[in-house]
Length: 458
Image 1 (cartoon, rainbow, N blue to C red):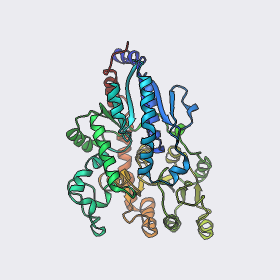
Image 2: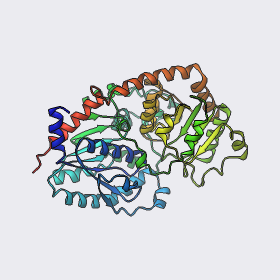
Image 3: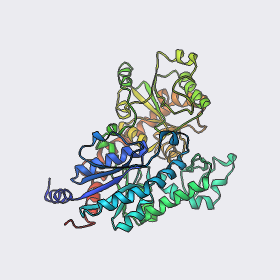
Image 4: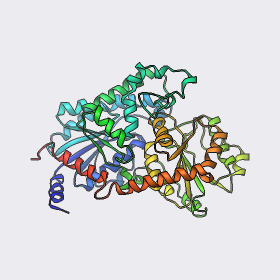
């Protein structure tokens, strides 16, 4: 370590960072990874977390933890749309968060707080306590810019276009089509739009933004961000290249999936997982099932309990399907995804286009089939198909003929070869990014310098 590194290390050892993740799996993972990254840089780490969806705390003996007694039950969450869950969390967390941070702020060693950007109310709390706030955006830069553009897109009439106009381009925001504008299943779209505006406004007031991305992937979007936001941005990802997400998983991972993959041919299997939050109707699950069966390709499929409302697990799949795929398909409730994607048998990944999954697939050079359910997934899938050309987007949603065709294209077709070549090229750039001399490595150094400039410890 050079003299600069030694002085920074000595300085950060006296500084405490308070991190506050949103209690959803796709948000917890990157925040815990970030906590480990910054702890490795010498900072002391305090995590504030809701009791709801709290990961196994014994995995983090090197962190100080404070639990918010949010009083949210699993039944409340399972019967409530996502927008309402976030409002519920906000209402029950703002007071306890303010109290905990106020108690912690008596210790002058706190350099700043780092909160999920969706916790917009934390900006006012931080301002009142005169503590700098940095936000973590767990999505891509491109999708964040799309969220920030929502008022403009609404004014331009894009949000009220007819079904027949869904394939029209969003002229102000290439490469998006109208169907790619972020949407959420909600009974109150106006409240969701107001929520997004508050998130963006609070992000503009923050001291900085951390992104789980890397410069070579989103260079154009980072440049646009710099034009529209005065807040410094730090693209230091992918986080999981520093620390795995396995210890913060809320689901029990079925390791028989790995032993099943061990028996499969190299690059023969398509891995299918739609993340930790997405849901679908029973008929759509059957479209997925028969698309997989008709493709005649081996597959590993994660069917999460709760993926279909009202079902326990596989009881809605027909005996005919289960018998047909018994020798070339394997279904589990949850899988160790990073390990699966790095397995030699995996030749493709059918994903919901969540940002963590997208980065993990790029890291392993695994080409994708792209579905999308809500929010940033709409934007990510379009970028993967049209801009980065590392995936094949299912334009019709979940329809068995298109699914079958896309799987065959990806796994055994010429188009799949092109996509695989593109993602391997991107993987090479990513591999260099977090290493000395790489863009993420330099950005992380800049972030550490930035944090240590906030306040002088006593």
